[in-house]
Amino acid sequence: MKMKNVWVLALTIVMLFATAACGGGGNGGGSDAQAGSSEEQTAGGDADTTASGATIAFIIPADDALGINDRGWIQMTWTGVQSYGDANGKTYTWYRPLDNSTQGYYDAMTTAINDGTEVIISLGSQPVEATIQAQNDYPDTYFIAVEPSGIEEYLTDNTYAIFHQVDEAGFLAGVAAVRGGFKDIGVLTGLDIPPMNIWSYGYIQGINYAAGELGITDIKVRHHYVNTSAASPEIQTLAASWYNDGCDIIIPMMAGGNPSLFASADAADKPCFGGDVDQGEQSEHILTGAVKRLEETVPAALASIYDGTFPGGTYRWMNVDDGMVGLATGHWRMDQFGYTLDDYNADLEAFKSDEGGQRSGILTEDTVRTDPNSDAFDALWAAMGTKNIEFTNIK
Image 1 (spheres, one colour):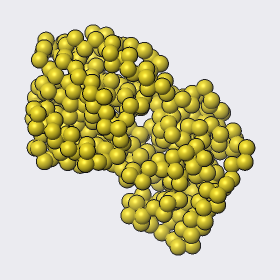
Image 2 (cartoon, one colour):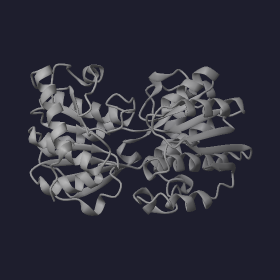
Image 3 (cartoon, helix red, strand yellow):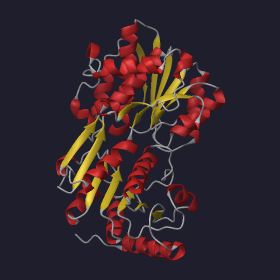
Image 4 (cartoon, one colour):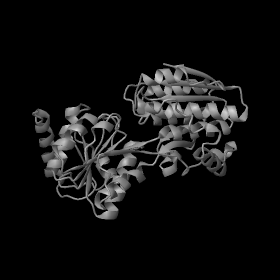
């Protein structure tokens, strides 16, 4: 297949221009086919560095609304890359494709490899097809794919895939919300896709379980897809309307859309949770949040390349036993609602031991974690058995 086309040429021209304008090599700064801002480059590393020659290349999503500093999973992945590189003398950089197509991601990967990278890190399901192609075309390059739904059966010896059982983190967040005394709980999901549904399904199952355990029968849960993973006035307006309608707390899984909720929580002086990573510094109204610790899983995967233990051709689901999913504790504010860190740790241990069947009962179908067909969730929503709560799924 002839992969080099006009997009490759355009990307190469921009990269050459960036090199001429910035000069130098080394750690940090990003390369962006759409001319990333100096603010992004400075936040990512040294503003006067370029992509050329970096050992580790992180392919970030093409969406302009996101970016290396999205305060979510992109930034935490980048933090993991930086921490490993700085501690081990490895150079690193990031690339943004020209668009979200398979060709766009493949071209970005090819450019990084031609620049001399040894390791390609990709994030999410959008780069999956490009990763499948590139891993075969460049067998001497290592690929680390994070949350790559649908890649499992195509992995080659130079590729390792990492998933996080975020339904477990979501479950614990749902339990925390109920144990904090909240009765009218909103759940906002960005897109109707497995990576986001898994979080939200866990939230609602946790709420349902805790309500049953505590004998609470008057909990109302409203769930809605906002159909975006970026900040928007519409999210802020919806969250404001829920708060005005009596919603006590809102739990999000909207990636880059979460800050829109935080703005509404600040305006309404109402509590909310963060999501994906510890976002507690963004608002004093964020009490905690369900997280996956990409800043730890990514460096561990990189270390395996250089210590000879790289598990190429395999994938792994990280969970609470690994300590890689759970609740954010760095900005814990649940104490004011009577749910302490000691309470959380006790609930975490009970969950690990599957007390009351809570852990084994989160998902009724194991395949839902990796099934790229989000229709699988329609049946789960309908058959979830939320007998302890009043549940409304607002499509």
